Length: 356
Image 1 (tube, rainbow, N blue to C red):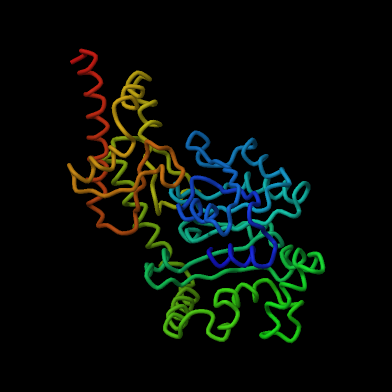
Image 2: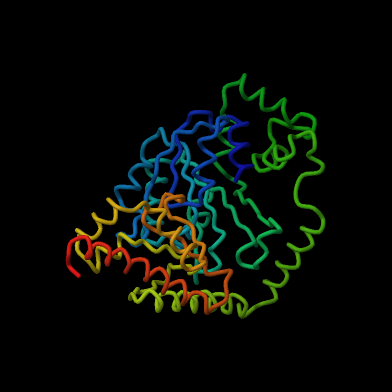
């Protein structure tokens, strides 16, 4: 994603200070990178709330109609809610782009797509507008190997935007690549991105190392040979079982829909307290505790380390759980620990009000 940001800026497709949209909640680097001095993007958040089952509402999608919004970056399925964009929302986005924003650039990070049956990427419906990002890391359990891919359709709006730049700017970008291409003006954006990843001068060393390429090839061959998708079924069952255990520990009833990847979970204290207790309890907690109190209590009292949802632009009173990297039985303990903390807040409220 850093390469994509850099090349879009270098080739004048995006410019410092431009407005972009982020589908939130979202993996924290997507929140941090746009605000760096080399980009200074104005960020519009297109929010998917738990009340709307982590789907983008019509009102949120309408933000993309503004021509000032040059690009829309999202993770699908999302991180941390781990919910795929629904077919209904995809259809609305598809219609919006085709009728009102044919110039909108979309970057979709689909790394968790293999955990949703029948997953369909935005690349399938909006190929000309979409930059696709995928990684083997989550699906194959190889996070340290950094095996990722970037996909761009041969017929895409970015190449046309570069070709349509004013002559002085087009000549400037052309000159950048003249040492690596016989026709630098016609060099595709995807090839420019590869060159930019090594500052052009080291283009001959761009890409993955040989061991990484070999590992990527083995993973790809393994998947092609797995004709009945037994591996996919097995990893999906693993995370689904862990979700079931944490819900048992939490003591809450949640209907798991077909769009949930079950790779991460977002436990929103405020959302569930609204469901089970009165508003007075919630106000008391907000007045007497900091949202980070949850993760500190989990660490200090239960030796459990979770991340606060606020760091992903999720609700402040939420925590993120990964279902990919701990033994099954731990998730029952996590659920019980989170429930104990919530119960502690309620008991503190009752004591303060003289209700116990």
